[in-house]
Image 1 (cartoon, rainbow, N blue to C red):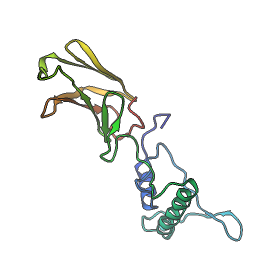
Image 2: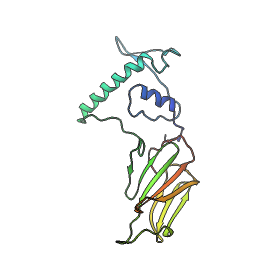
Image 3: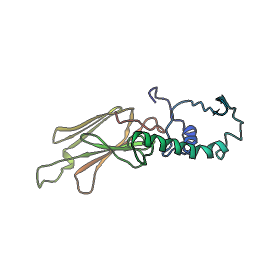
Image 4: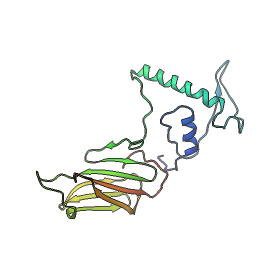
Length: 188
């Protein structure tokens, strides 16, 4: 991820088949190894087609083994019934920042920026200015900057749009990612 390698969907799928929920997101090339621990620890070979199939016996067994390990870790740390956290802004969850919130999927990010007005006044769309740059989105209202968001990776400035929500209290900004297929670990 730090080297900005593409996500490895096949490795993430294997993680999901092994019981991780949500499946972890892996980046770049992945090495999958297997060991036997009794009577002593040794490496065990994979048999292509059998051990790499989605219904392989070791994958089915991994679900309960990983669940038991996670429950053991939760007990050791005093946490109850926790699952692995998803990346920020994914799986329908909203990542909250100080003056905006955001969500993402593999194709785009969506920023939600509150627009405040004087009591009783209505937001004037003509007073909103949104500037899109490959790695920055800036929002101004009545010539005052509301928010400037530095982005983790580049967006396609021609694929960015904005709209007001129904009660005109929030600006919804949608930006297409240049490298679609990547989940960002953070917004900036």
